[in-house]
Length: 314
Ligand SMILES: Nc1ncnc2c1ncn2[C@@H]1O[C@H](COP(=O)(O)OP(=O)(O)OP(=O)(O)O)[C@@H](O)[C@H]1O
Ligand SMILES: Cc1ncc(COP(=O)(O)O)c(N)n1
Image (cartoon, rainbow, N blue to C red):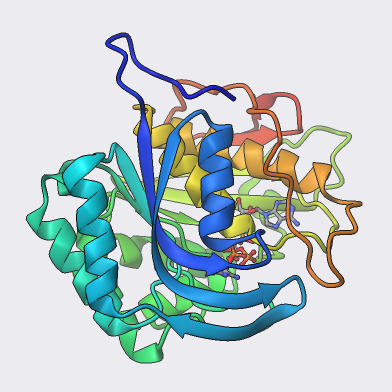
């Protein structure tokens, strides 16, 4: 994909502030591959190195907070940022440093997506427990969007998220911390929500859906795809939030960006379903073609993507 520009020749730039995954499926590597695929110039601030592969995280080395600040300042001072995301932030000192730098830079006016990465697939913690409050108090108020999965949502609001009602309640509570929008990702949620919501899913669908629930300005909007039965889902959360960030860098409205990113991650999981990359949870296919944009998503609607088209199902 060629780098995209606007009519004045401005190259769209996106920044990821995250950890390195030596296995290339998640973290900084997934983010940069995804941004590149969306035609956006990607930049990175590395918070931690992980010795990681598809079987798990075998070691972590955190960057000194001053060096995270130095990377961030270097990018902001010279290249400029149209949208940015955070992933693995590792500890409280790094979170406070990122918040300090962003709140003094003009960059803070750019959309910030927070993917509150907490635990890797194999169970290794990627952030200290003591850092959660700082993330909530310092970073969420700056966010255009926060993208927790169900367990992360539960940790952030201090209540378990394991029923359809609890998803709604938690999304509302999370928004009170100041993020303009919240998406509770449904990769970990195996609920019969289609039935609960009365969605009219296409007859061909097997009703097993992965639902992402968006809460913004007092309204819930839902994005659904079939649930893919695959072991290769390493880095889905990183890839999804990086795609949203790339689209925001190009000026897309947040709901349209979430829809297109949701279609992208679905296609990327489907394309990598039978891959034999590694012996554990393999990566998704970051070279997936960009799915058609769905512009003008109506807040409050429910939308289903089947790998080709979006259908309104509410
Ligand atoms: N099996 C699946 N089939 C279809 N979509 C999925 C599947 N698993 C995850 N997704 C989608 O991928 C995106 C990331 O969701 P998920 O809840 O898995 O995030 P995550 O927990 O941060 O990622 P990970 O589980 O890799 O740490 C969401 O849009 C979600 O709906
Ligand atoms: C460095 C790093 N960052 C994030 C994740 C989680 O990835 P995801 O939630 O996308 O699977 C990971 N495993 N490693």
